[in-house]
Image 1 (cartoon, rainbow, N blue to C red):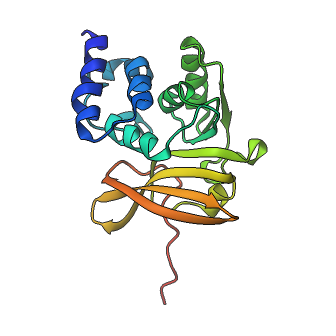
Image 2: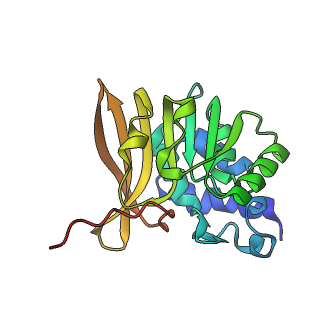
Length: 219
């Protein structure tokens, strides 16, 4: 399989034709070899327009969903960013081409080790892979200009929003059940000490472990 051709087709046929116009996002996704970030037996489907199963309840997000989240985030070259649930490091590798620094948080030690190796192979020396609970974020390096949650969530934890810098943005696909099986590509911005929120698009992706909404009290 010619992965370079498959990557070109992904950008031109899946992403560009679906309202992703940010040239920097398109360029970054055209440059990162997505097939290296999936299990070897899955490389043949690395560029299909769906999530790729990494095992143990983790997935590589569908290319179009990631591209639309990145476009919604309006990534700037000077941004210090945090990726929540980096998995094997694909999203961090793409962000490394868009932002000045990336902290890639992963709760699974094996995935974190794999991500570190793959990112090093890609020369992504502006990415630091760290381990810890995903819902807690990584306050040691906060505040961040941008936080991207690399998977679906039923709600966005306040702890993550609080790690945004003034003017910072958080993007996530919120699967809160209000749109059936679809979720909302959501942008949270920190302005004047408060938070604003808007929806940019609808899509679906598997929910990250630990990001189910806490059940309400039932009498």
